Image (cartoon, rainbow, N blue to C red; front, side, top):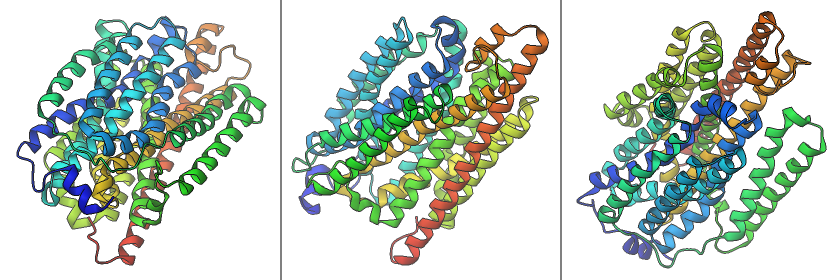
Length: 502
């Protein structure tokens, strides 16, 4: 496959006449998938009560979706380049709708986890094509602005999930947070069929099915070990065995990808310092954001005592800040002035500061949390478009599907790992502070088993302390990601000064 052939077969030259309408259509499909990444967080207390879900069950309800999606994104990217991005958008919407119906009607934790895994398949087909389509229908002069709007939708979906979930739970049972996806999927499906042009490269690489299997097994083994650590002990066989299997399988995945002619993940991408810098930032900001939002909704409901709707409303300033800054073009205007490395460093430092403010100032009331949410929103609005643009600009246009798959895979892995690691930190800290309390792995269970008001207060204080510790871990991870990404990108620009900084 040559670059010239790929470009002629993938998309017409110049700007697509309906590019902005198409962007709106695919962002609608994307919003549905992204909302599902976070909307479940606000339903945690309801699932504890109505399904009897344990803390580990809740983490798997969230991680089953993320792990399946991240394991399939790279294969879906290869398939999109070869068989057609529009076809995969349509198939993804259909599968996502079916999975949403199954999740909404689930009667047990196991059924919900299985349905969430099925939704992850549809989500993988969608997410791998959306950014690739954006790259194909916009030329260089408009691509940064289009990616900023795409990133706004990404951030909005990430942050608005708890708000929409709170509204639904205030009026309906928990299953409604999944059934609401169905009419949105139907609308997006109609629009995609009518408006989105087909783009593909028939001579692209074949899907790497073994690579997809190895990556999914490897990531599942590692994250399973992290989730199980607090319950079984970090040195137990139930933790060490899946961890060792996961690491070994991921190593085999890397060796396999280096040896085959059509790898799911082209390891040569990792020779590009711009790509490595953007990826490092994406993983760690997803780690901090995914895990911290998982903790934030519990903080609002369990510590500050808000109901699901009130908790969702109080996360709204995060989304509103992101939307306001990106729709007014602050990010796209600052990016060429500051350069990609400095923009990412400032943005992720703000995200880290916001997480720290929530941890240190949010325990006694909503005021400190509000400050943290606004600061976080400003940081996300700056950093996420810059990171996405850096990743896509480091990958050849003819591999846009694969590039989007790499971007989505590592972000999803970071998100799932953040929920697992920060959730494990919370559970471990909580169990240490309340030794001997029955049900210490779950706050509602521990409170139900408490003997008297003094014991309940001690348990609540221990949970708040665990939240503070885990949120600070997330803040450190995000700050480290920002500094590492900025350093690598700056070194890449110094090594290749002819390449544009933004």
